[in-house]
Length: 272
Ligand SMILES: C[S@@+](CC[C@H](N)C(=O)[O-])C[C@H]1O[C@@H](n2cnc3c(N)ncnc32)[C@H](O)[C@@H]1O
Image 1 (cartoon, rainbow, N blue to C red):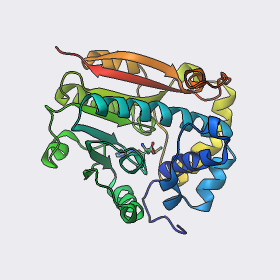
Image 2: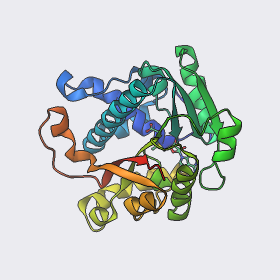
Image 3: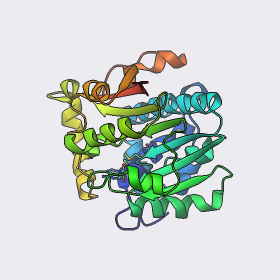
Image 4: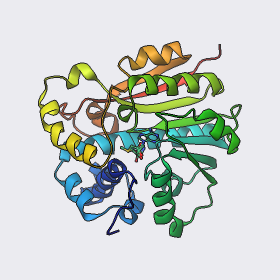
């Protein structure tokens, strides 16, 4: 694509470019395969991703972690719902052959580009686009109006989104998920570990990235300052919480040094 329509997410394109570049690695290091990313990424996004190998590693790890969780959840719950909160250009409805219905929440402009680039790929998996600004609107009512069933088993993928929200907005999303998800439903997300982030080399090198995101209208914000506490208060048990760069041994790869402040959690709605 040569031009991004105004308002469509650049950060989501950067993430897609990191997934695309996995194809250039030796097979045992790829962990993921996202040929659909080539439909959306422009040369600028690919160049920025290529220049940031630590970011590529983090994105590969978190994509693999979430792919495995979504595949396992949908195998256990045929007919499950997959809620992509901040869907961007996440190609899971196309990449993973799933018996599931996808609900795709994002800004309208990003959902429109998503639809335009992936439409030729077609997919049998049912998908429903739900345009919502998570920072300023409640998303549960539009989601349910679009056909989402709060009683059905659901896996929520909230990937690369929390730190684009203020603490207040991110906590409101967690509270809403706690209110309407059925017991046993699962949320997977990444968040920034602020204690690791402050005064580190990553904070210094992240400055360029932050500036570019701001120029594209996307500002990094507070996110969930106490992610595990917020989840507990909203009725979730956190069953896993790990730094993305510490995941390689789970996939038979050598441990990487920590370089980014991103952590991943898996949280399950309690039966209370
Ligand atoms: C870094 S991208 C990640 C996209 C996707 N989850 C992925 O991993 O490929 C962040 C996404 O969150 C979306 N987003 C950020 N703030 C949002 C908000 N207030 N409401 C809805 N979506 C938002 C952006 O539009 C973008 O698509």
